[in-house]
Image (cartoon, rainbow, N blue to C red):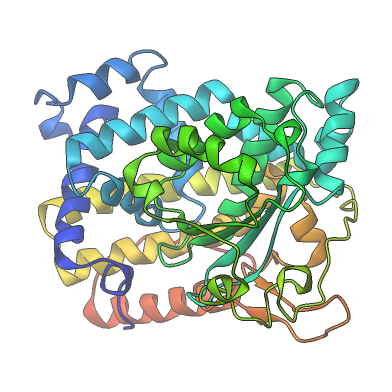
Length: 416
């Protein structure tokens, strides 16, 4: 069989940390084996947070958050953010899940562009203006293979939208970016262009909220952040902002006026022409086509399949925690691959369409890619994302291998 996900993305120390992470998390959520349910949990802080909404609600939030791909891909980010300190990583994840529950992130994802634009009143108008003007968008790959996001500060004006509408827009943008950064090696490179920036463009509340998102809710997603063309007035603002940043996030931020500095991170073929690159691609917003009428019976079938797969994942993870044998590791990867296939089928029911679906950057088959101009027919797809057909082939090869080894494995049927 091919190398396991652990072998590709985690070193031995991180794999051990993940085992301890899942053991404590399952204990807190009551998902550990029956023989261990009477054992006390050591993380009182996390337990106290869970009591606010209950284990069932937190477990639901956990699986919604992590089953977009191999759940380890999300969890390792919290483990790394807390330098393999399991208690701190668990507390960080639980606090993130609490925020996702209370902010109702799943409803933000469900709305999609059209859902937000259809809202009555000023907030709907504000969202339409924010997304159509090209305030921020994802386009192209960095030299590290991750996506690139651009932010044009001149389009930001505090007061043009309510604080809640601004937070919704930030979360919607972060969740859209997350579609490109699920894999642990696919981190985002951000270019913030401050050309034309003035005090009228400074939104302190939005900036502090974005900082919180990067540090606490979407950790280890940032490759580097480049502040470009900063005017004199911004330097005083930066002193205040930088003092509030997590040191890890702060270490990833560079301020420059040099195009060459940007080109150390982004190849000129993908760097936008206006910023000194060769890419003629320009933000030209197209409203996504309406969500197709999907059969509710199919949605319920996929949700039932997801629940079944989660049950299998919990069972095999508990076995892997006690014995990280090759067989248990392969079984766990096998179920994780099936969770990804399930997600690709279920996602159209749970996520409203975005501009990235409309442009073709995000494909229903699981691929993610870009092109350097609107007229180009040449697409480059991320090496970190596996298509649905490739996943199904991997699942079939795993099944054949399990049969040869006479290993019992969960049987789940997928539509071809």
